[in-house]
Length: 178
Image (cartoon, rainbow, N blue to C red; front, side, top):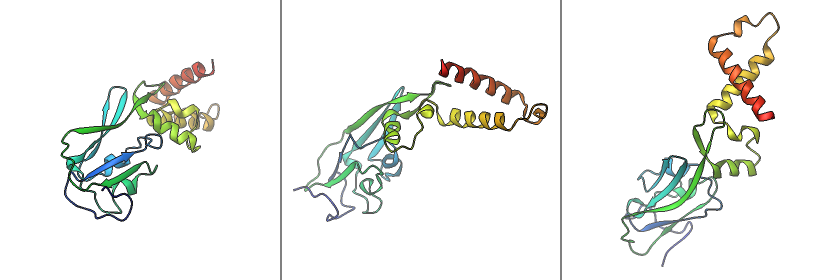
C-alpha cells in the first residue's frame, strides 16, 4: 500500500516513489525542477510552451526538508512511496503550459500559469504582464530618467542607447494607449 504524508521512510531505492501533481495549484514556478538533486523532475522549454516531467526510476524520495513536496510554494506536489518499484523507465508528463510572449521584444519568458497565479495573489501588475523582466526593467529606467530630467539640464542622461530605448518605449506606450 502506498504511503502519503510525513510518516514515511525517505531515501529508499529509486523507482519506489511517484508524485501526484495538483494541476490547478501548480504554477510551473520551476522550483521543484531546479532543486531536484537526482533530476527526477525536469522542465523542458520548446518554442512557446513549457512542460514538467517526472521520471520514476530517478526519484529517491529525498529527505523530508528538501523533497519536492516540502519546497513547492504552491503545495501542488504530493510525494508517494510505493510498496514496490514501479518498473517505469519512461518519463511522465505532469503538466504543460504556454509561455507568454513579451509584447515589446517578442521573446517567450514565463509560463502563463505562473503569471495567472501571481495575478490571483495580487503580486503582478496587469500592464507589466506582457513585458519580460528585461523590458520591464528598461521601461522602469526610462520612466525614471524622464521624471528626473529638467529642461536644459538633461545632457548628462543622454546617450545613444538611452535615446533609442526611450523612443521605442514611447512608441510602445502610444500603441498600448490606442
